[in-house]
Image (tube, rainbow, N blue to C red):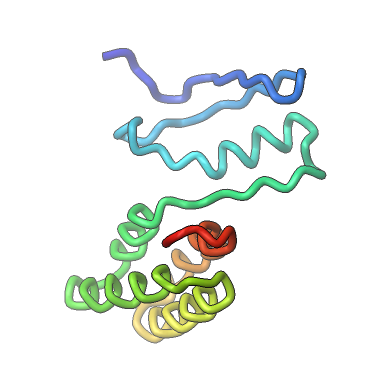
Length: 131
């Protein structure tokens, strides 16, 4: 298999071209491209353009779990499922803030992991799509 690490990617955006370096995860099929898309838009001069990004919830949960003892994984799953299952953006974000506070009482790094990109985990809620 070809080495897919640190591949240069060129994308046509509105008639212009934007190039950026992208380091693929160990499993390239499960790549979370939020940061790459943001950087590409910035390099293409699309700073005024609003791009909505939905982060992968499974990856977010796994990233948080790395900081927690296994005894908290079940409760984390339940709390995240409840928050992400809310029908509106504001209620979902409010519930995620409660999860953040709960995590902060256990492990600050876990809370920071949730906080990073937290609003992007509820983009589908913002758009009124079924969670």
